Structures are given as structure tokens and as C-alpha cells.
Length: 450
Image (cartoon, rainbow, N blue to C red; front, side):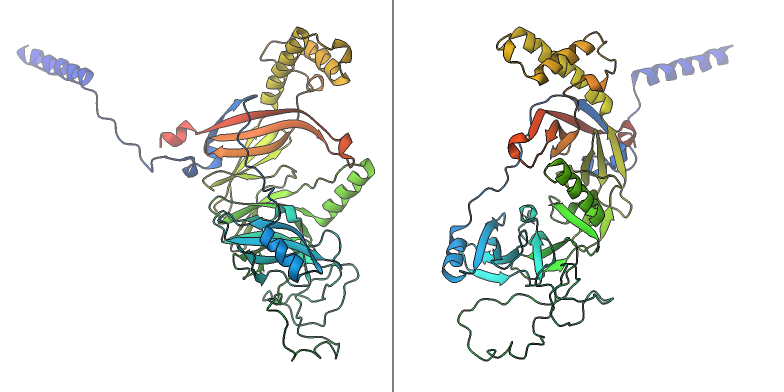
């Protein structure tokens, strides 16, 4: 009996000690998550916030042409016309975009200048035509500039790439359709008088254009360094047209959009038939400076991809869905963020608010446009629905696709929705109901508990 009491006392004492003194918390196994950079896209949670203030957008470079570079063209290059200058982020280099009178419209050339307006290097060879000059972009560290180019339509030289990536020397002959794959050797010619003045002294010390640069029949992405040297194609996919690209914040990769030639031609034809401005669409991909390329998605989009501030992820938009991709790895993972239901509910609330404001102001009621009348009637159609019921999208005037992305901090991804109609006559173009929304990104609990 005494023994049993002793055992019971020990059990009671142990229970009291456990209840009064909690066990120390064991540290979580695995690496500690300190940044979303360490979280795969598929392991992200998100919270949707509708109709938030617009993020601070980076202003586009609208600087006037550099005065020193313009002066050099005026004084020494009277047969060449300067179109624009693009300074490097550190201000030490200036890329000159120009054309000569004989060049075809929309085909340009590039030269590298110092900040003082001294020509350092002719970047593009004569047989190369730079396209889409508005998309030319310096890397954030000012070490590299990326641009799109292809075989020049008039001065193209026919050549076929060899397996090692170089083309054999060929006689320079014009390409009738501008579609010859070329690697021009400007020292070889069939004209016996072409080098008649080769031994005469040169009047100026103008650098010669480079030779031996591989070009293609469709627009490919090229890079060169800040000195104008080392020009090379990052992409070599004949038949694809690369029309947009953006550097990662660390300057190691590009996110790009590309379309096939047939897709491009079909969209151009459709725009022409509808008298609209041509807006290209393409499939997103990531391209490293080494030239390694990975397609991220099979979906087509006109929305330009954006990088996360840590260069770990890329976001794209497809109609009313956002997708986030991991930039690293051989097989990048992706996470789809379906926003249709969120946008439906927030658009219904937005339309109701607009209707309340419209009813409260009765000013200029006789001057209401058709869009205001439709907004009022459509808002009334959904006013009887409970706040969580999905409205009919046909009754909502503010329910529109995503047209723009912005990723200012690693936890905040902004998206803008709007209705856009771009017509050839700008006066007929329309942009209505632009609204900004926000996704707040966090790791999933399972990630934090590892």
C-alpha cells in the first residue's frame, strides 16, 4: 500500500512539472526561409487586393538626343541620320541609333560613343539591320546592351551557317526578299575596282564596321559590351521573331517574348483588315547571357513579362490569369494564379460604386455617354446579388483583361486591367476603366514549417 502511494506521488509530481515547465521548441529542420527568393513559385500563397493605388512606375527614357553625338553626326556624318541616343545607366557610354538614306524604313544601325561624344566603335555590320529600336535596353550594371536585329533587306549577303556557328565567306549579293541568312565578309568581292583605293590614306579615323557576325532571316536578340565589342546573337532560332526583352535586375538573364513568323503575319493581316494598330503577341522565355534559352509557357500574350526584384522569378499575364515562373533550373516550375473570380467580384463592387457616384452627382445628366448609361444599367443588374455571388461578366463594364504588370517588391505584384482598343487613327483609340490591383505573396505554411 505504501509502495502504491509512493508511485502515485511520483506520477503526480511528473505531471505538475510538465504542465508548469513547457518543453523547449525544437528548431525547424532544413534552411530558414528569409526571402521569397528561396521559395519555389508553386509554394507561394497570394492575397488579392482590388482597386489599390497605382505603383510608382519607372519613367521611360524620353531624353533628347545627346548634343555631343548629334554634333558629330552634323559635322562628320552628313550622309547618316541620327534617330535616337540611349545612354548607359552609369552615363559613361551612349548608344547611337541611326540610318543612312539608302536604308529601308524600320531598319537601323548602331554605334557606340563615349559620354563626350567621341565615336568608339561601329557596333553593327553593314549587312545587319536593327529592328524595334524602342526595345533596345542596357543591362542594369551598364556592361551589356541588348537589341534585336536580322539580315538587312537590301545589303544582305547570302551565306549559310556552318555547324560551328560560323558562316563560310561568300560573295556579297543583294537578297531580293531580305530573307538570306548571312555572315558577311566585306573583304571579298567580285568587283575588281572595289579595292582600287585601298592604299590611299584615310581621311578620318572612323572605325570600320565589324565583319563575320552571323545574321538571320528573322529578328533575333543580340548583345555587345559597353565598348561596342563582342557582338553576338543570344538566340539563333530561325523562324522565330523576338520582339520584346527585359534584363533581370542582376543583369544575368533576359525575359523575352517571341512569335513565329506565321503568327506575326496573321496578326498583321488581322490588324490591317480591322484598321487597328498591330500589337504582337508571343510566348515567354528566359535567355541567359550564355545563350541558353528555356521557353516558359506555350500560351501567347501581349503583356510584357516582369522580373521579381531578386531576379529569381518572372511573372506573365494571360487574359485574367497571372503566372509566376522560377527563372533558375533546367525545368522551371510555374504557379498559375487564376484571378477571374476575384476580378468578377471586385468589378461588380466597382460598378456599384460608380453607379452610386453617378446617382449622387446628377450633374450633366443629359450629357451622359452610352458607356455611362450602360454602366448604370449593368450595375443595377447586379445590385441585387449577394456580395459573394459571381455576377454575369456580360453585365460588367469594368471587367477587363490584365494589360500591365509591375513587381516593385518581392512580396507585392501589381496588375492593371483595362479595356484597350488601338486604332491606326489614334483619335479613334480607346482606353477605359484602367484599374490597379495587387497580389500579396507569402510562403505557404508547409514551407515555413519545414
